[in-house]
Amino acid sequence: MPEVRFTIRWPDGAEEVCYSPSTVIHQHLSAGTSYPLPDFLARARAALTEASDRVAAKYGFACSAAMDQLSRIETQAAMQAPGGEVACLRLS
Image (cartoon, rainbow, N blue to C red; front, side, top):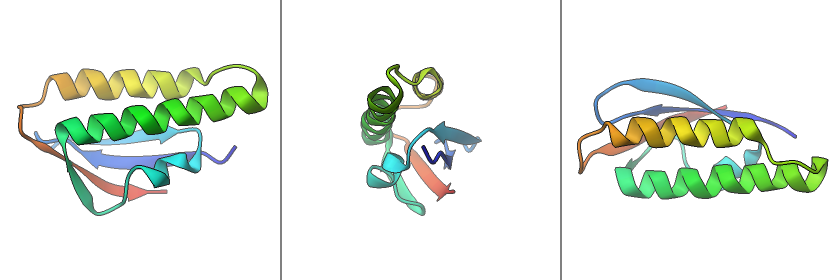
């Protein structure tokens, strides 16, 4: 499956390169767009869960890398100030 790296900027200014095992992330995030933190989390959860499900459908097991990435995103999000926005800088 084609993997995608997506770079985000957290409300605190930190940038992070994230991983999706599927291009489905393009259906949930757009480069150059900022999302309110709760919206970004919902989009990341939906995209990475769908990506993991696609891996499971093809290979017979869920993608632990997608779920690990989601866990890292949720952990980092919990440390951000409420009301912030997450910018999706690029998808490649």
